[in-house]
Image (cartoon, rainbow, N blue to C red; front, side, top):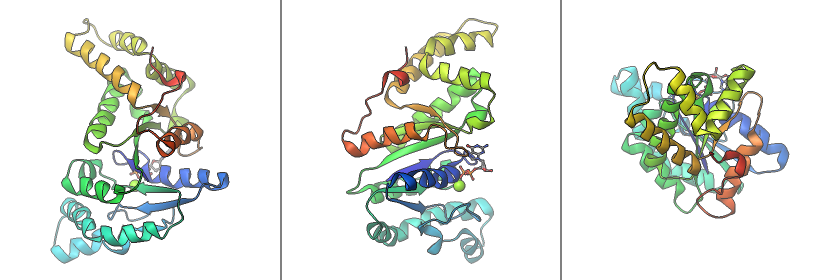
Length: 259
Ligand SMILES: Nc1nc2c(ncn2[C@@H]2O[C@H](COP(=O)(O)OP(=O)(O)O)[C@@H](O)[C@H]2O)c(=O)[nH]1
Ligand SMILES: [Mg+2]
């Protein structure tokens, strides 16, 4: 089971849909599960859908809530239907289950219901998380660092083997792509670029942060992808297969190890 998590608009639903489309021709059995009760329109038809049980608009009317309150309440209410969802997953073909999570990451990630959803659905199953981030807002060193922090925060919160995707690379220029790949593989280059954007020297704090993030990126692979074109999906699959084939930790190939 693979949870797609990430900030609103980063491409979780698009990834779920296009990764499913990528797996099917490889003869990998795949089921899609939409766990976002607040999504109005999905670009794909999920095999299992929490909205069958809880739908934000009904909750909003029933409890006379505002839009934010209704989203929170509907995610919390989803928990009541995990038994049904689990049964539907069990009846699905054995293979990949791609779980699309609520648009607003913080509701899923930093509230108790998110934790209940992952731990219940992951009981007796191998689970991993794919953090989907928007590469178009990771093109400056400080933005990139913030995105890595976001992934690190998710890693601690979820406690699942994880892959971090820098999605939407089809929207980047060649130069931006190359820079991103360089920062992923070489922390010194990130540090240099960071310095170029500042007038003062790196503070001790920033130096420590960079080291720390470097260590984090040794455990969690960062992969530039496009959910529009499917670019680098084979790398995502490679890492996810590692989880299903054995250990909980990834053995990073050289290409993805920092210098
Ligand atoms: N160009 C491009 N657009 C993307 C990509 N992934 C998602 N999008 C677009 O980003 C917007 C938000 O995507 P969505 O999957 O709904 O985000 P979610 O809120 O994380 O589920 C949509 O307009 C998508 O078409 C990508 O890889 N490339
Ligand atoms: Mg979505």
